[in-house]
Amino acid sequence: MDRFDAMQAFARVVEAGSFTKAAETLHMSKTTVTQLVQQLEARLRVKLLNRTTRKVNVTADGAVYYERVLRLLADMDDAETSLSGASTLPRGRLRVDVPSPLARMILVPALPAFYARYPDIQIDMGVSDRIVDIIDENVDCVVRGGELMDQSLMARRVADLPLGVFAAPSYLARVGVPLHPQELEDSDHRVVGFLWARTGKPVPYAMYNERERVQVKGRYVLAVDDGNAFLAAGLAGLGVLWLPKYMSRDYEARGELVPLFEDWSLETMPLYVAFPPNRHISLKLRVFIDWVVELMAQHAPVADRPGV
Image (tube, rainbow, N blue to C red):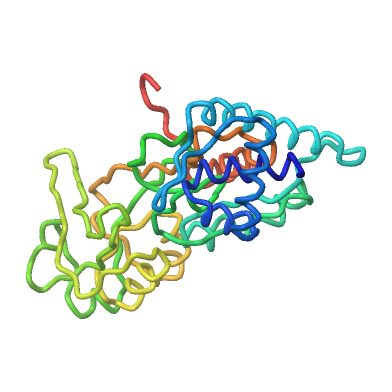
């Protein structure tokens, strides 16, 4: 029995709550994972897991052992990194999930500079706006906009994204330019709906100026759950958009999007990097998070917030 493989297998089964899911993320067969855990239990002479037909639960002894295993695996990872040739550069595979527009417009174009610094990190990047189960899918971190709903996750706020309201010239030529946000509730106007992953529904936007505050939801003919498709729908003239300004900037400059209600304000959208609370922050994850912070500071730095 390879004790390192056995500890890795045990840790993944605990996190995934399933031998099948653990095997998938480790790229092993379920039989191999089962045998490794059984051999580990035999060596320790302790029952680590309670198995039923539906669920795998960690025992009290298993929970204590799991915490120690995490520290051991993390120490081994750091030890290997520190001995990688004459360099102390981080290395290894990093699994991340990021919003599609952020990947396309900011993160991926900046990756050559990241790899110039950290050539030995391999990134598996999921690009989506869906909710990712970090534990079950064995993801090291996710980058997400909006307030985090899962309070069990550790998170670092990496940006505050300014928002604006925009429409394509073709839309405005067809329907007219709205002068007040409340006009978007009228029968003539349409918005592009964004289906937020946590609710599956569009949400109203709060807008305010010195005199009043309004909630605007609007009517839509199309709602999507992907940021790139959302932007494409607005460019096609299908409705008014609420966008982070990093997404609109180039299209404004080319005249493909027109800003609306410029004397009104919207709350900024927080951007977080979130990761499992029980995971050691490896060097490769730490430098990735620091890189995202550094990169986002060029586009939308975190605003000073009293008391934070």
